[in-house]
Image 1: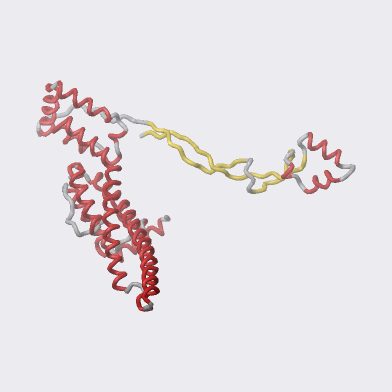
Image 2: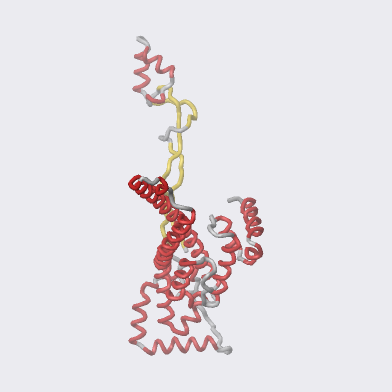
Length: 337
């Protein structure tokens, strides 16, 4: 999206979303502008703001706000039971990452729900009309063959929507577990091992970039067991934690605990390939018969010139079109974080 188009989209959002959009951080406004919303802009913006404010306090907003219904209840239950609230308190970087991830999953669940409801309603209407037509034919009363009334259709639609929303709420919770369970487990392990010192140092870790997944924290359980066997090490950690709280403590040296890691990234890129025939660039000498010029074809069919053509063909000196094109290749490069 170009800068002008994005600015125009944000202006329309501010117009339709009232003052809620203006109170959101820029990353939230960009996400809303680029997404296909199911609810209104105002409802979505106010809901995101409520979730952000509540998570910064280590809480969840009241049920009934965006997203409403079963989705909101499942989302609230997951936040309270997964343990993410403790890590979100006073951690705006992590809160923003969590809320924006929730936005994408909620929109996906809502769009899935709308498609499922429409599909189920179409199937039900076809079956109901066929059933009533058979009843009318059997009873001989054409009035029995009338399709469902608008009230019946609306009642059944509400019932189907409730069932689908409950199923999508379970899907939402399962998706959240798959995305965040391992991260939360790692963060809990760090705090369990280091106690008070871990809670103090947490503010220095960039949890929003998943550092714990790339710096050897998978061995945290073994470290925890070691500290259990050596209580003196735990006492030293707690002493250091109390020293950090002291106003008179002076730390003379700090050392980084995060090391640079590299990973190989594969990308599918469009590259120029001489064997792909997409466009003509000129004429050159070769023995490529499909790209042979018409003059060479006439020479090949001539009873006398055919020997000259055979000689050119053997020497790869036939006048042929020079063509080229583009293809896709997997290009690997190394990224360091």
